[in-house]
Image 1 (cartoon, rainbow over the protein chains, first blue to last red):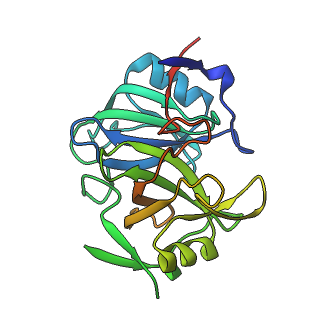
Image 2 (cartoon, rainbow over the protein chains, first blue to last red; image 1 turned 90 degrees about the vertical axis):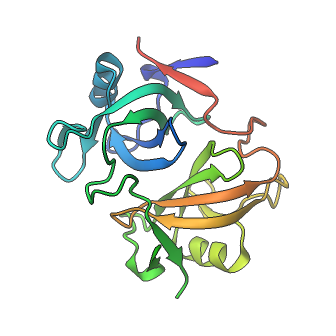
Length: 110
Length: 110
């Protein structure tokens, strides 16, 4: 598989990229979070997902508070180099509601 | 499954939400695109994915040019109501490069 390094990423106007998180065990899409360069450097170094919390404006080492750590198995980059796909082993629930995935609701029209 | 309608969505500062697209047949994450309210209304009405092209600044009915239409089977909303997960039947390739998924490259450190 072709490899892309951090220098090739295209950050948005606030210096972030979206990160789609997929469970490697059952392939469920668990959540979408955001990362800046430092978050991805720490993710690469530590073997677990580190994000940028847009609400708290600080690095967010997923699981430090909840215990719901995400150990990544594979990190991929899309064709435009502006989205990351993290394939992870999820401890416990990905969602702060306690659901395993954040996508537990269905979209309907009016 | 709990249902959420378009009025409950939380659009970003440019009136968009990210849409994560997953292949229902093999569970691969295919791409991430963006949608405004009109794009999601048309998606719901037409049974196929319609996005907002940020580069062309126009509605993007996926597959109109390429033939690579995405028929959605299920649309989900995340816990914060600011990301959509579309589970689709993909005709042909999702990626403009001709790859089936946009995530065909691996992220590495320096």
